[in-house]
Length: 429
Image (cartoon, rainbow, N blue to C red; front, side):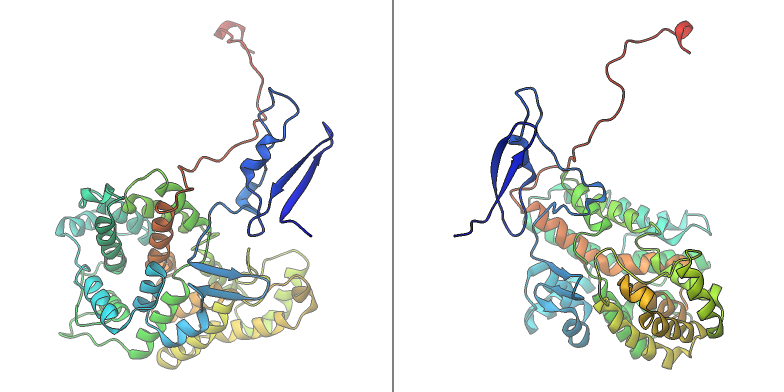
């Protein structure tokens, strides 16, 4: 009868080792017993960028990149995007189950009544230069919140953790909107507790002189869907940063500032900006065939296609494509959408891209939608950070409650100099 073990023969010594297999993995620490002698530290794995290393176990997000599947707590992303609000999904991601009517009402109430930020935080944000990058403002302000809630470092207290989670989910739209208004030289708009989560965000962003801001229901729903699609995505760069920083037992504001900093990078939260830049360079549908040929010849990149994990059509991209159509019915059609649709059609029928399993990802359409809603490109990473807050916090809390987790401390393969004696200045070459 087959056993769930892996037999390894060390050809250096001729010795064999039998390691248990659990959920398709072996424990890296089990390799330490494989040594050439008493002075040998033991075998390690070398895996730059964690291409094939599981650093944690999780119950939050299931991702099957080969088959284009994404689920939160077992629920297909397609069903959640169609039938839920973002705050429903946020509750699901944090607590493992969809809320009933009473739970949802209480949850929405808690989030809604934590949206106001301290006046000193407002003054803090006003001291940024007028041209400060909105994401830089967002990161700094989230970190600064830790000084306003010193009890947040009591991370082992369930009630304290819960309050900080509610505060962060509630306040990130306010911080984001304030960073946008500051960059535009506009007065800050305070939260409106009578509006929905996305509706309140639209109000804080775009309200001018009207007494009561009424968000367009299409744009309000589009934001809800976009927030759902970006709520969590397994162990990506920023989530790994959240877990790694959080493993030091720091407060969640500081840990999340680090996660947001990781998201700031162009290979992560800035990917949809690269898509817009590419579409702008193409300029017209008639230029697409020539652009495709340049990509094949290695003279350019097809941005928004392909993914580190997905080797199939990103399920979020299918949903977001329809959202784009709905948004453009309200905002007016953007020429970039026509280029994107034609580019997608050509690429999906071209054997070059099919063989390489390059399919549209979520970034391919999200930037076009944000641009159509009147958002500057610099603000796109902030739009990513707002919904991802709940994913970061859920992953952080799961890490804290996992008895196997310790402070993150990867090993290294040292390739530097062996022991050398110090040389006085006069003898140095």
